[in-house]
Image 1 (cartoon, rainbow, N blue to C red):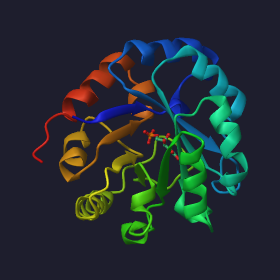
Image 2 (image 1 turned 90 degrees about the horizontal axis):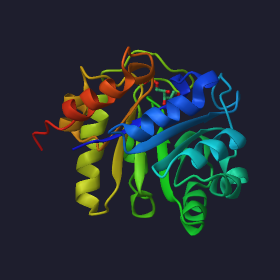
Image 3 (image 1 turned 45 degrees about the vertical axis):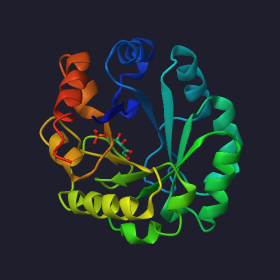
Image 4 (image 1 turned 90 degrees about the vertical axis):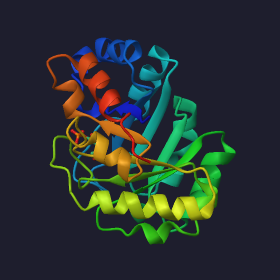
Length: 221
Ligand SMILES: O=C(CO)[C@@H](O)[C@H](O)COP(=O)(O)O
């Protein structure tokens, strides 16, 4: 059964307290928090103070996805703000091993995200040192984009690599996730479904989360 992680990027920021309360009372397991710097991606979202406040509303895990250059400069600050899981981009890290080690040493789970063009094979040597991989199924930077269909093959390839490695690494899929593709994603090997627009723009976000949870529970694997 997949873990559901609603992405707050699509939330109504004027009603952030209510949006957090909705997630807290829903079937979602994690909060997914997208940090964008206007350099690694062509958009700016929110940062440390917002995460610090969200942390205070919840006991659920805060899964922070850094779409920023030089993420190593902020690892300690995100730990202090309350991140439980911290994901950096493969494409943003020259010294990826050092970065993920630092994340784990601070007591967080370490994740690596891959842009749509980055092959999963590049993660082979880092799998022993990480807890999750985020397969970006849209180009990072914006919510509400169309799912890139070739992501399914990437997820299946990565699942195979992870099985062969023997390390317990979760696969997260992020971008264009909906009730229509959730089952296919889980069958391909996804463990965590991140969804923004299809949760927060729904008429009933709590029901949208429940539908994702249900759709993501029909696994053939
Ligand atoms: O990281 C990102 C975008 O860069 C995602 O987390 C989006 O926020 C997902 O949004 P939807 O595609 O579900 O609207």
